[in-house]
Every structure is written in structure tokens, then in C-alpha cells.
Length: 399
Image 1 (tube, one colour):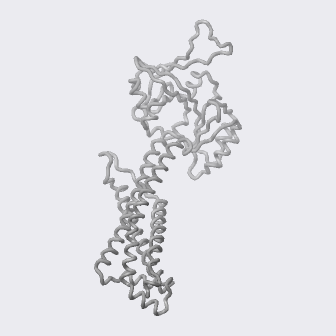
Image 2 (cartoon, helix red, strand yellow; image 1 turned 45 degrees about the horizontal axis):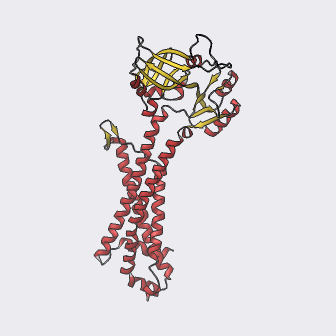
Image 3 (tube, rainbow, N blue to C red; image 1 turned 90 degrees about the horizontal axis):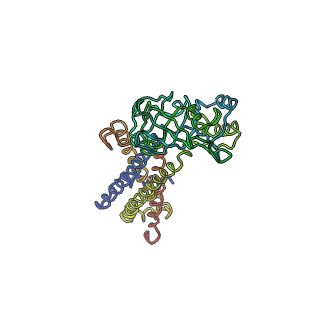
């Protein structure tokens, strides 16, 4: 093993007598460097885009969300609240109640979701950072998404023209309403703030106080449609989800942040995988240069191989010389490529020289997982290419 590796190292450092062979070797090494750097940059770019996309959702989605498995609402007793607040690893929790309503403002109207939340909500999710105008104040006020506000032409602190909330009343057991009673519940509220997260969420919700929403929905103070949970750093997510299910006893479903946005996470993973496979295919094609370079080296060193064979080295040993040469070129080129890519990514993180807009730098993220993926991919492909090329050494060549 040591002899083939030593000779492979000498071949790698020594120049060939044929200029064409030297040029092919240089080009092969350059292609490996560029391929590894490109793959690492693309994966880091997608990691940055993933973090950038999820950062908008993180301002709205809690670490854990508790919902009823089959129905809209469930009850949470004071004893259960006490048990939840004592859980180790839980930082804050917030109750909410949500229902679809009809909103009207002047001559504009829109169907949206009324979300009543308690005073802990802005501690559980980072909704304060998403406030576009005004403040987060649900004490006799509401907070609406900027998309919904544009549809209704609503503005903050408009006390002369508040937003009307209409909600159909559930039919009584008799199936009829009393004489003179309205088939809907009506309330009015002014805005204290407007938030901006993303188009889908900005046109969906009107936040109000939990008590206000429960009264409007004709629910008691124990009735909720969900509980939002914020975990302490390093808390065991799975264990807390199990404990919460046990405390609430009912058929509740505890969702993690990834489960709350399963379609978004699946889309991001699919895009990342597709990009990785495409660039891996490009890398495979590029490594055909390595196969050609090793075969050219075998032909160029044919007389030396015959001499080594006559001195007692086996065909397997001679194959290992060229195999090691290909592996070293691949690993060295991959390492240099990743180093160059890391420098470019670091400069982008620090200086933001590549920009999507004048105020927004293209998001990138350095992750060790991407480093392992690139080096693992280049190593596997390099070993395979070197092994295929080394098979060119056979008895007919050494005769």
C-alpha cells in the first residue's frame, strides 16, 4: 500500500514529458475545483433562501401549536393551564380562538379570519417585529395585515369609521331564530396597528383580544381553538409535545413548526434536492475529465509501469498507483474548491456585495452539513472515476 501511494505522489508532483498530458492534468484539477465550489455555493444559497423564507413564517408561527384533532374548539381548565405553565422547558404559552368572519369598512368588504389572542401572544411569536405601522395593542383595538387593510381601505386609529365584524349566529335547537333577532352578531373595532409578513398572511387575519373574540363567538372563557407554545432554548420538543397531549387529555394534536408549514418545508426540500442532483450530474460529467487524464497518464507512463511490473509489483499494485493519484487530485481539488466557495460566501455574509435589491443582499448561509455533502459527493465520485480509469492497467498493457 505504501509503495503505490509513494509512486502516485511522485507522479502527481512530477511533470510529464508530454505537454498535452500536463495541460490535461491542470485542466482536470481546475474542473474539480470549480465543480466543488459551484456545488457548495449553490447549496449555501438555497440554505440562505430557506432561512430567509422561513424567517417570515417564524414571526407568525409558534414553536408548538395545540389544536383539536377533529373539531374547532376545546376547553382548557385553570388546572390544565397551571400544569402547562409548570412544564420544564416551556417559556410562554398563549391561548387563541379563531373563526371566519365577514369584515366591512365603508363601501368595502372581505371575508377573513378573526383571531383572538391573549396578552402573551407577542411573547410566544415575534409578531412585534412584523408591525408595519402603529403598535401591537389589542386592548379594545385590533391589528390587521397590510393586504387586508388595503382591500378594506382601512387605517389605524380611525375611530370615526371603525371596521364592522359580522358573524353568523348558530341556529338554536328549534332551528329558528326569535322574533326581531338578527341572524348574525355584529361588532365594531378600530385598528391600533398593521403588520406585514407575506402576501398570504397579510390578507388573512384580524387580531383582537381573546375576551372580545370569545364574547363575539358566544363562547365561554374556557373555550379556545388553539394554544401557542414557545420553548426555552435547548428544550426537548418531542417530550414537551407528549406532555402537553397528556395534560390536555382531549384528542388534541400538537404540531411542531415544520408540521405547521409542511407544504412549505416539502417544497423547499424538493427544490434543494433537485438542485443538488442537477449539479451532481454536472459534476459527474466534469469528472470524465479525470478518467481521461488518468488514462493519458497510464499511457504516458507505460514504460515505467512495465519496469515496475518486472521488479515485482503486481497488476493490482500498479492499478493502485493511478487510483491513488485520481483520489488525491479529487480530494485536493474538492478541498480547495470548498475553501474558495467559503471565502466567497463569507464575503457575501459580511459585505453583501451581491444584492437582490438596493436594500436587500442575496441571502446565503454557511452550514457544515453542506460542507459534508459536497466533500462526500466529490469523494464518492472521485473514487468511482479513479477506479474505472485504473482498470485500464492490464496484462496486455504491460506486455
